[in-house]
Image (cartoon, rainbow, N blue to C red):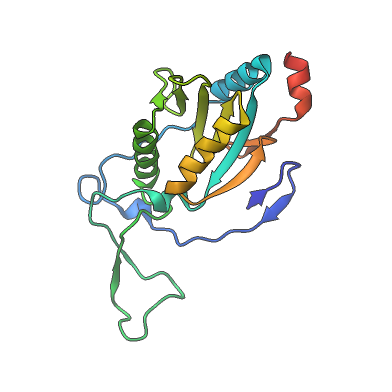
Length: 199
């Protein structure tokens, strides 16, 4: 289920998912770890943005896990309802990571990290979900939380340049100014009132 900022249901989504529990380590997966944004980092960045009067925007990457690259050969049986009438016993060889595949989060995180590094961002030493670009007159911070990116910066122009940079590589939905962060199934709501309180 996808939710709105007020907690109401926005829409239902369905995906083809793998039986990741049937995978064998060393055979069809190696690395599985992918960091998730810590709430402390989210709060710290929001406090920084409020204190400096910066802008905070959010973008959602569509089908994020499908953006990753598989390093191992992974096969799966045809899911119910998609069986081929001509080849009913055929199996699928995956070209991209699907949801529930053990290495899918790691593959996606590696792909976007490499892209951000190539474009001037460096990963924070204190949190692998925080990226900073400080080599320009207008610093930019990005928090990566699975498929959601929160972008903070002083100028709209610089934020829009980063959005354009990311949308050149990944299919995304621009959610404009940050209103909420979905964090471990808890909806944390931020309003413009927050800036007034923190300043």
